[in-house]
Every structure is written in structure tokens, then in C-alpha cells.
Image 1: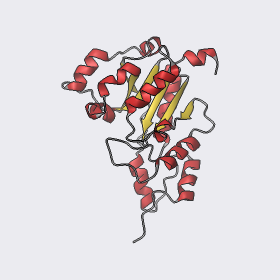
Image 2: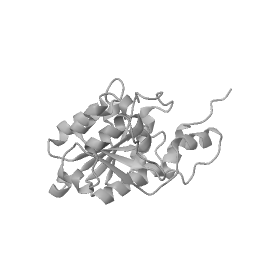
Image 3: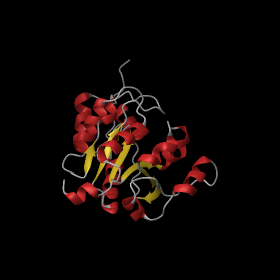
Image 4: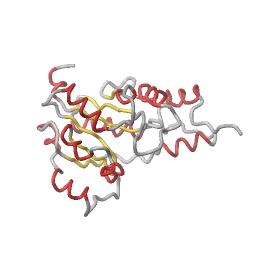
Length: 221
């Protein structure tokens, strides 16, 4: 990695990726290009603390992410949450990344607008900005909350200047509207469980992996 790449912001895009699909990948790539990121790391959650642990194992989900980002050097699978015991708390991953990258590197945590609304239920959520910026991917028709904890948090920390994310290592919240790709991992799983095709919703190599390992298939009676 060159010196300029080392100083460019690093983004972390967490999720269950159950399975990873073109909505995830296109959003990650557009962020790389718009913000001039060094890279965007897709970080599968091993034991998501705010939802049931997926039936599809973390190992399978990470393997699918690795297949999906092959050939795109700006997108990387980060397996750190698979290597840690217990619930996959995002704040722990950001703390570890900050230790690895140093005090001055800009780190950007990428979340969806649904996750933003649920932040008060996250473990040590108010500490997230100590380690990274938070970038929220907004969907068409979505609006920010006008009252409550998140509204107050945004009033204190939100910036409308993307350059601020590059100049500071952490501490700001930025809202980004990206190309809308209405693809749902839930719908992909439903298609596969019912024996229907999910082609063109996710990379072909990921679909081949799902077929090879018979993932998301309805259990026989």
C-alpha cells in the first residue's frame, strides 16, 4: 500500500451478510469512489447481539464475502469478529482497528438508516465516535428522527461536509444517499428456501457457493 493510501480513510461496513449481495457491494464501492477511501472492509458479524444468530454459520458467510470481493482490491473481508469469543460488539472491533491504525487515521463505520435508529440499544453506542466516524447510508424517502436520543446525538455530531471525514480521525456523523438497489438478504433467503432462483441478485460465485454447500434450503420433513 502506498503512502497516500495509508493516509486515506478506511471504512468498516459491518453486518450479517446473510448472504452478501449486490446491494452491499455496490454501496461499498460507491463509498470508496465518492470519499476516496483506501479501502472498505466488509466485516461479517459472528454473533450479532441484537438479533438471532443466523442459521448460516459465520464461516460460510465470511467465505461468501471473500468470494464476492475477489478481483476488487478496494473491497476486503475483515474476519476479526469470527476470531473473537462472545457477542460481536461493534465498539470492540472499532477499538481494535484504532489500535492497529493509530491515532491519526480516519476510520469510518458504515451503517444503514435502520441501524441508526437502533443505535441506543447497541453496546456502548455513545463510545463509537471515540474510535471512528459514523456514515449512514440513507434510503429514498427516509428522514432523520426529529426527537429523542438519536436526534440529540445528530445535533451534536453531524456534519454535512464529506471532507471533514478525511481531516479528522473520528467523531462525526455523515449522511450519504447512494444509488438505491432494493435487494434484500431476507428475500434472497426466501427465494432459495422455496427453490426459486436468486440469480442476478448476488454474485454468481456466491450463488455457486450456496449451491455447493446447500445453504438456505428448506429442511426436509
